[in-house]
Image (cartoon, rainbow, N blue to C red; front, side):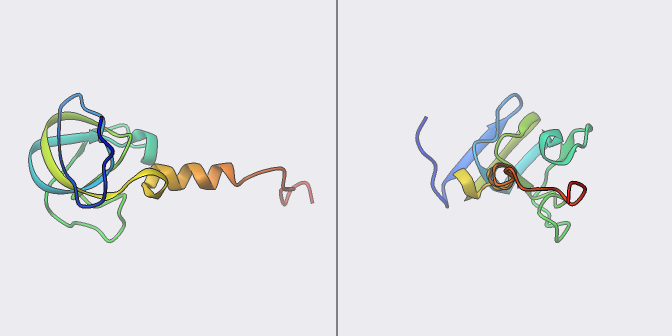
Length: 105
């Protein structure tokens, strides 16, 4: 697969992994599985509507590593690699080293 860059337009359909963090431009019955990011077990509907200030809550974003369960969506790439939501979570988790926890102290 080609390397995606900011501003690329991508299409996803049921069964596809979302290839980057994208802002939804068009969609038809699109639902994604965000359970790896948010813990929500229910499929999350996507739309072009900016519905919440929190990026994890708004309907117009789909995230790298989540799966499109049904429908189709076209979106513009807004984050790639370590800058994606899951990439930032991974870097935060890897930064937790051998530091003493408050309980140990």
